[in-house]
Structures are given as C-alpha cells and as structure tokens.
Amino acid sequence: DRDMGSDLEKVLLSQEQIEERLTELAAEIDADYAGREILLVGVLRGAVMVMADLSRKLHSRVQMDWMAISSYGSGTKSSGVVRILKDLDTDLTGRDVLIVEDIIDSGLTLSWLVGNLRSRGPASVEIATLLRKPDAAKVPVDVRYVGFDIPPEFVVGYGLDYAEQYRHLPFVGTLAPHVYGG
Ligand code: PRP
Ligand code: MN
Ligand code: MG
Image (cartoon, rainbow, N blue to C red):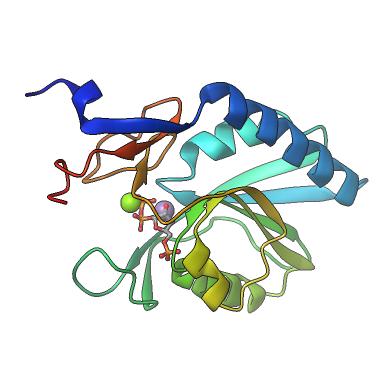
C-alpha cells in the first residue's frame, strides 16, 4: 500500500532524543570554538535537518555553506571516489571549518571530503555527524562530534533517505525489510 507508516519497522531515535543530543553537541562546539567564527559546511542533501537544528542551538558566530557531492560507481555502496556537484562558495583560507553530516556509514565520503577541504588552506577542519555506523571505524577519519553510534541497520528519516523518500520524517527509524527487498 501507499501508507508510509507501514514502511517503517521501528523508531530508533525519537525527535526528543535527537533534540536533546544536539543541544549537548552544540554546547561542546560552543566551548571548543570560543571566540572563533565557525564555517559550517553542510553536505547535501542528507545533512539539511542536522544543519538546521544544530546551527540554531549554537551561540558562536557562524556562517553556513553547502556542498553537493556524489560517489562514482554503481549500486548502493560508496566507492570512495567522489565528484563535486556543487562546490562551496566560500574561500576556506584561514577558516575554522566544521563539516556537518547526517551519517557516516563506510566513512569514504567524509575521508575524501576532509582531504579535499584540508587542501584549501583552512585553519582547521572538524566533523560533526548525527549518526555513525560501525564500519566507519575502518576508515582513518577523526570525527570530533558524534551524536549517536548506531547498529548497522538501514535507517531513514531526519534527512536520511531511501530512494529519495523519508527525508522529511522528524525522527530516525529503521525501514521494514519488505521495502528494500530484504
Ligand atoms: C549519504 C549520507 C552521507 C553518506 C555516508 O549520502 O548522507 O553523506 O551517504 O556514506 P559513507 O560514509 O558510506 O560514504 P548520499 O550519498 O546517500 O546522498 P544524500 O545525502 O543526498 O542522501
Ligand atoms: Mn549525504
Ligand atoms: Mg542518500
């Protein structure tokens, strides 16, 4: 049927849990960046919700910019080879860059992105992600701010999609296996 509710298995992180955790992360970030201006770099499109909610909790001076990137290769797995679809409009020279992501799964997207942004002469590059899956540990990326470490389940909502659907859900949930043919 077309009822979205039946596509979901369970709520993994409620709206309240996400809100609470983002409040904690924002406080950490404010303390770490005291007196500096942060350039938040959101990775389209999954990071839109985290960016909107996390940024509104920051008291630091903040600018925002966005990048759209896409992994080369077929299938659902990241290849680690990344193409820039929309680059930043901001010069990173001397800037304190904080990448904002919804999820680190294989870690390949971020390890490429960090390298790319570091090459542009910023003062610093750090990462804030709402979710992290266990495989991310295999890639040598230092993630400064992690909302939740989650099991290797297929999750959607709060920016995360399956076939471009479910991004608008205010919570993070797992998808019922019948939806993705499991
Ligand atoms: C998803 C997610 C991360 C990336 C993580 O983005 O939003 O950006 O994959 O995967 P990785 O750690 O295995 O590299 P996706 O490429 O699906 O684009 P989207 O944000 O537009 O959904
Ligand atoms: Mn993404
Ligand atoms: Mg996606």
